[in-house]
Length: 385
Ligand SMILES: [Zn+2]
Ligand SMILES: [Zn+2]
Figure: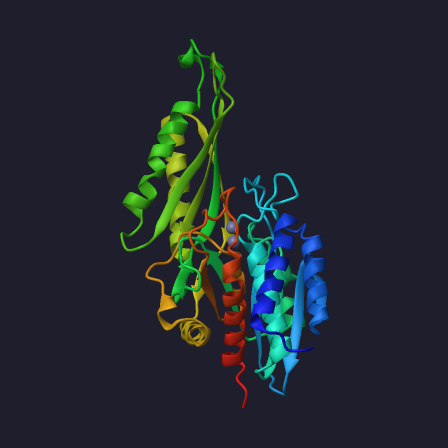
């Protein structure tokens, strides 16, 4: 494949990104996106496997005789959010949009494949992993369960996410914990509903539910060590009561974040104890369902240094830095790090609307930085000679 100047590549990536943005697809429904990716990768001369873990795509590019393999990963899915943007490339699917910039991530990884296929500069094998259903926290596991590591082996993995508020061309990451685990919970209180005028005749659940919401606040404030990070957020309280009827049923739902399995386990244990005790105090019954959706994302210290060094070969020195604090948001990339070491990076999206906001749009100015960063990581980790 003929060499390509980087300005032309940037224009091509912009066209891909806007095409993907106009045609967003929800997790595990990324059929058009996956076909788009596979077609491009084949055109660049890569070996392509489709349907890996549902709608996942893996492209493989080998140069030289080195037997090392590394992976680069992008996510392809969109969100069920109605876009408010008015740009010509706005979503053509009502109620679905690329509000997290996965259209940009996919385009940058395609750009990296195009760069590396055209220019080489490495010795070994690169796996380009395009995963489905990141937002659900289910896509990485689907690919792993479909034999990703056995069919397309690799020793380490790199990925990135855009970050509104960080300037274009700026990259950051950190060693150790980067993003948190996400657990979800539902507590169902069961009593006996009845007439609003006769509370003593039943065992209504709303006052118990309100007490329980308050009591749950003590998990983080009174039970976790002050040096541990934990979040317990109650997000919904739903009852079957109505204007003149007390509820016999109340459901409390929410979301917890943590960085260590021990903290996640402690939150669950305390939640069960508090739900049980509060329910008993109010003479109702409690059923707790606690699920683990995302694992914590832990970067490998050596590969963080390597990725930072690679980033400095293609970006301004002072634009590449170590992030001070981990984030309590979650990311499906973490599942890959359960199997191989790796590093996840954030790149600036400039002053745009926040992620998951209906006015958000990936900033095309960053596309070439992302593609060149991916390529630089490959050239450092699979260095010639
Ligand atoms: Zn997202
Ligand atoms: Zn995202």
